Structure formats: structure tokens, C-alpha cells
Image (cartoon, rainbow, N blue to C red; front, side, top):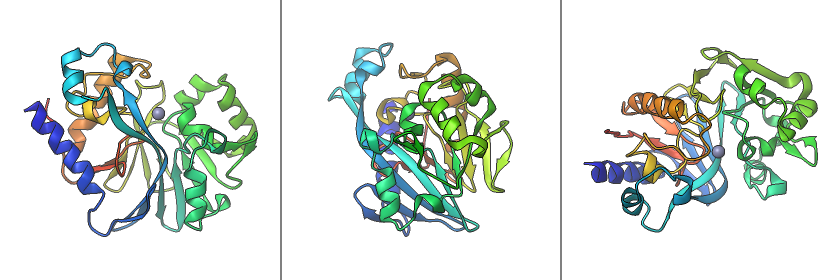
Length: 270
Ligand SMILES: [Zn+2]
């Protein structure tokens, strides 16, 4: 059963990459033309998640789901165009860390000043590094949103405090349940970090770091990568959103999901 679920989930990733009118613009950018908005996956970097990140998982399970000792993953940002607004979800690692997101955006003829809103799922470096280049704000006009608890948790963080200085009054916080830019809903997904957020635009959930190694954590939501700050809460959160995402009406875009980064019909069973 678990194996079938795993295969189904992988199939869903592959299908999502060639679903409907989706077009692979280039190797690292995927475009989705949904009913009321456009979505781009901007792959900042292809990467893998090592089995070592899951020290609590039984070796036999790891051998089954990650026979090579690694799971396919990526560092993704997502861009949505809706109601004449460009909304970016996370910003990758940044050009100084060889992140490709900014170059991909420019390749789409979208300039940094065209980005109206940036929604941060959380404040780890692989999600916020791309907001800065050489201590300067990359996005000169964007209003940047994150949850109030996330801002409090990262206020003293070296990189995040530079971002606070550089973006100044363009940094805004929300409480879970608030709506941003009239169409981005916010949900409490804490556990990975204290203010980790899942966003929703129409039928698309942007799930941040709910999943690090899809091959392991889709069939086994009970396991955390060492990156999850509060593992018990992270498991509870993951199971909660999996239940929602089982519904075939919804899609999920994940910052570390492999392939196109977008999944349809999770098919979770646990
Ligand atoms: Zn991450």
C-alpha cells in the first residue's frame, strides 16, 4: 500500500509537469495557465535531500524510498500573475549563492521592479537570500509579507535583519487567516519554523517547507527532516495539510518538491 502510494505520488509529479496547457519554457522554468491566474515555477537550484537528514527513520524504510541514499528535490520559488499583480512566493538563495531565480525572472521579461508583492513562507536562507544582492534590496517596489510570529522569531537573524533594514516600511506582517493583495489566503503551518505559512490562491496551495524529501515524506508524513524546528508540531501540520490535499480539486506547489514543483491529487494514505 505504501509503495503504491509512493508510486502514485511520483506519477502525480510527472503528470503535473505536462498537464493541460503547461509549458516548459526552459529547463528550470515551468508555466501553468490556470483558469484565473498564471503560475510559474522558478527553480532556483536542482538539489537532493540526503537520507542523513532523517536520522530517526528506520534504515529499511530509507533503503526502500531512497535506494541511492538521496531523494530528488529542488529549491523553488513561485510566481503568480493575477488581477494585474505579480506575486512572488519566496525568493530562493540569491545570485551570490548561485541561485537562478532572478535570472529566470528576467528571462521571462519580468523585471524586479515589476514584482508587486512577495509572500514569504518562512525565513530560512534558501527562501529569503534572493531578496538581497550585495546588501541591497533586489525588488525595489515589492511589498514583502510574512507572518507576525516568523518576523519575531527571525528578528535577530543576520540575513533577515539586513532585509528588514533594506526593505524598511515595505515589510509587513499578517496574522494567520488574513488575506494579502485581495486573493492570497494565509494558513498557520508552524512547526518547521515558528511562523511557517502555507498560502492559497484559488485552488493552489503553496506549501513552503511542509515537505523536504517527497519520496520519503509523502508516504510517511510522520517523519521530519532535521530542519524542522518543532518536529511534533511539524508532523501535525503536515498531516493536516495532506488531508486537505488529498482532495483532487487542489494542487500543491512546494519549495522543495522535485520535478515541476507542482503536484495534483496527493493520494496520501497513512
Ligand atoms: Zn527550505
